Length: 316
Image 1 (tube, rainbow, N blue to C red):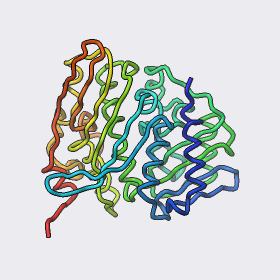
Image 2: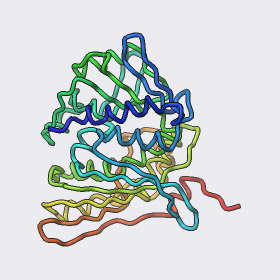
Image 3: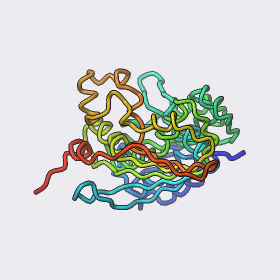
């Protein structure tokens, strides 16, 4: 079986080797673990964001940059493709592991989840388990983990702490903006799983989403980066087992929370994420190529207006 941790580690080694060019910092801690700072105390870069995205996908996806227009405004965007959608997205990329040790809190995603089986029900559903001797995790945080945090991750994953590698970036940096938009396929796959579709049937997937401008405020950054997918994220999948009743529920527009920038929704709930309808965390549109019938289906639409408001785009 494919090892998402071993595949991702090859990319991690490249990040370390090219850290200066990528404007990131690699640190070996006292216990031998490795922390790669992608935006906490460093600037980061577009290229680092692309590699961060590929690491999160367990080395089973490829990310590239392009420029696309929203209205008349050219903006940077990310294209992501994978021929292993279920494992790359649900088995690695999903932000499904809340790391909380003493005062350190971070959302964990990436291949290490497949070792720790976080969350367990996801891995039971997709029947995937990695048994690599190395663990690669991506932490969404504005603080770098210390030896204690890295030891906790090692213990949960059942590996030697010297073989633990953590990529760290807050949402409010260029790497954060890139990697959140790089989850465009994952949001579609995850939504399908939530709706009861067997995502192991999906053979190929591609997606694109604009990359939100860097916003210094973390909560506003979380809002703008998620809006990139919710209001302008496109996903194309090839699968068997097409079910119209399921697929038409995928786009974010089916959510009762749809229609406003996410930051405004959060502001209205006192920044209580649990008060936001989870169905909104999905791509704006999805196209499905059905292997059984040979037909292609599409549902959803893009919203230039909400993105323009979310990004605070102004003509001069």
